[in-house]
Image (cartoon, rainbow, N blue to C red):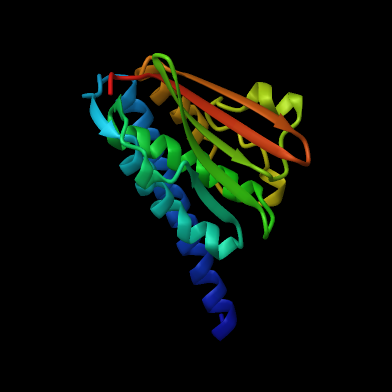
Length: 193
């Protein structure tokens, strides 16, 4: 192999290695979630949202996608009862999927709402959306909605998201309009505060 071919081969090996590492980590996490009860604590919603926005922000910026939190995380003082690492992982996954679904110039919004005894995190994008058939399949382990576009992923993110929501006695719903938008809503029991 010569210079450029060698570099392409090395990049391909590195990409596949990272993909396999990610797949292994996701499988391990899913296995652990099926056998352990997480430890919950009250976590400030604003802090959780800020961590998610900071984690996904650089990828969104690199893709030319606006990533926003509403209300501003700094203005939210309410706590939510959760396992913080799992909840952060869930919201990062949903926001990351939204960023992947958007073309440059797109927008992803992470919103917090509170209604009575329920808290909700809503992730909405103005990306390519999903058809009805895809909506019936997402959340199944290893199902990838958009293999043809090469946007990455291993099909475990939404399966993990569903398991995390179940562990929190919550509910996750999705609505989508093909070619326009997708909205994921995660509803959780809310602590007093």
